[in-house]
Length: 344
Picture 1: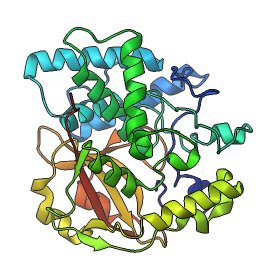
Picture 2: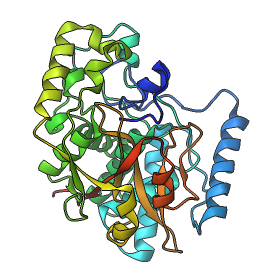
Picture 3: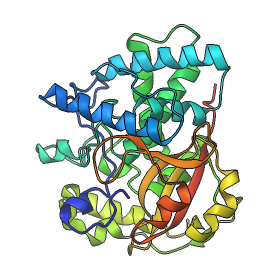
Picture 4: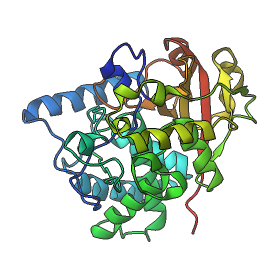
């Protein structure tokens, strides 16, 4: 699901959806994600934001943000409120992209959703809800940016701080991350990103654009998790292994619509800032290897806003979307989904 190359167990671990784990299922902020060497974190953020500013016209480059998750949420909501007062309200996807802009420079951190299992927690118990705005992998950046956007849409103007927005943020993450929006055991999580898209589309969270953009069906069976059982600590449990196998087989009748790499330039005008991108792969048993947002700056060139697989920090690519996809090892194209407004 996330992890380009997959040449080792560490790379295989990137297939999992990641974020940051809590000791309990309660919705609470993460500890600070800052390295003990504060100057290193500041350097990462400044360097990444500076690179983005050089690459494209970027009005938010260098914007300082608090180091705590809840503090970040409060500040980002205030920033969105100020921007909307000046420019007028925009759609959910564009709001999420604005959040992604605010996240530029935030460190990448992979393979943390299973931390509770490594600490001895049971994958058959209700999974702790992982929330972070101070470290991301590719999927958690997409989820968190959309969740902040939807919290903003739900908040009356001027009411953008306090405990309530954080709780709403947690509920929005939960609705996206788990099948039918219901958090239960490990197997209730949407481990394959193509199912993350199809499940969200069924519930009105987004619209799958694959068919209308001319995507071709990819009907290969998804078996990556069960065929790489040793790479997933939770699958050591026989019950969980069986449940994941049932989930995989249940996806056999749900082919993905993939826009081929060669076809992307032809349909690029149909992709908007804030559309969710999933990068399809030819790796046996796997649907996609990365997730991101589509992004157009003031130059209107289509690029990628993402937490890069190579680590580092959240960024906007210098390369265009077609160039970026062409460079992905074993990449075959993209899936595209458009976030929809929060239901009132």
